[in-house]
Length: 359
Image (cartoon, rainbow, N blue to C red):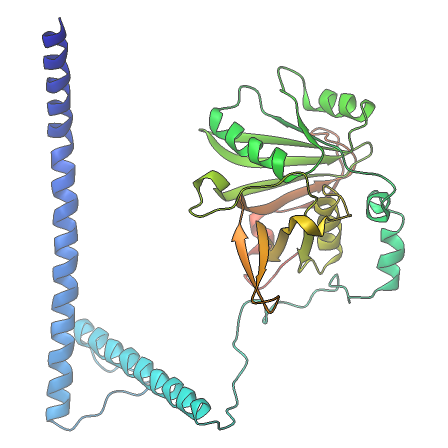
């Protein structure tokens, strides 16, 4: 029987190899064809350049039109030459700038054009010290946490029948966020879970859901009167998968860094995220949690910092997990899918322009 089992397994592996062999050959052939195409294109470009140098023709300047060339292949070759010459000139200018700086000369640098610098003007962008906004925030749902009158108490739960991959993520979150407790969802509706958690003194509830064993998003509901937000989770990497990562000391409260939440909506979302953590950090633990907003994507990072060279230098060691958040909606009150009133809903057609941001 043992010999028979080994024979069956060997035949199964052989059939798997026979099944995968054509696909592997096809991929290898594609790679070889791609290499040959790149080599042929480089050879043709070199030949054209040598021919132009032989006849004393300079490379086409940037912005030159080649509409008069009817041959499409020749026209594309001239465009490629123009782009290469433009890249060569830019590299020459950069090299000269670096050499001038090395000689101690004063060099004027231009401000790079980025999507953030070209952001469309928005009337909801706030100055750093807006008294009206500070008065409004002094009466909102999160003010007692920032004053230190109440300590956050978080309930974490999941969708029905979660996978082990989701539990790996939750185990790290329970150590990351102080005063956090996990309770299984079972068959209870989310509205009933919110009501029960509010009666038991929880201040926030976080419900994580997944699809095909991949974490998809989280519902964050502030208790007892809201608001509720839904965040899409992408690019998740656990601390256990990070090479050279540090271990989390959950006995110390982390330092919280909120960066680039500049609009009215951004300030409100930032305060909801900040209210999940105690506002009295333990600096002995040297832990820091960062929510960095960039182009309406909130990047979450968890670090431990350390000083060296007698405090003149600082280094960071990532603890994890790391992930990216995207707010899909913000709702008044606790979770209510049927009759809830929304403060903000993200839609794909509301952000057609890449220079328009809401957070």
